[in-house]
Length: 121
Image 1 (cartoon, rainbow, N blue to C red):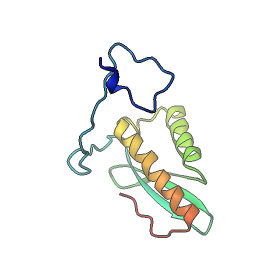
Image 2 (cartoon, one colour):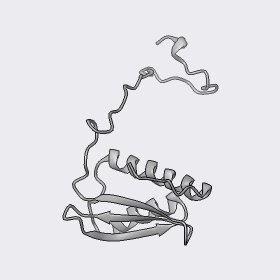
Image 3 (spheres, helix red, strand yellow):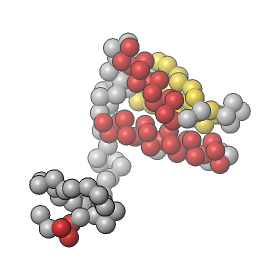
Image 4 (cartoon, helix red, strand yellow):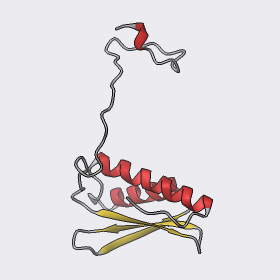
C-alpha cells in the first residue's frame, strides 16, 4: 500500500493493511434503483404545522401509516422502531434506507428555508 493513497484529511489514524481508496462510479437513478419488497414512501413538507410527513404505502397503493415530525432523525428513528416492534419488513434494502434519509434531509432543508418547491425524487 502506497502512503500516497492516504487521504489528506486523515491525520492521526493508522491505515489497515488492506486499506484502499475506491473510486465510485456514477449511480444511475433509474437503472440502479431497487424497490423494496415491503413498501414505498411518500414524503410531504407541511408548512402549516411546520413538520415533515412520511406515508408508508404498500404495493396495492394503500397508505399503511403516516409518521410526522420536525427532524429527519425523529422520523426515521420512529419508523424503524415501529417496524421492529411490530416485526414488519418495510425496509430490507439498504439503498431504500439511504434514499429515505436523503429525501428526509431535503424535506428538512425545504422546511427550514420555507421552500415550498420540495419534490420527492
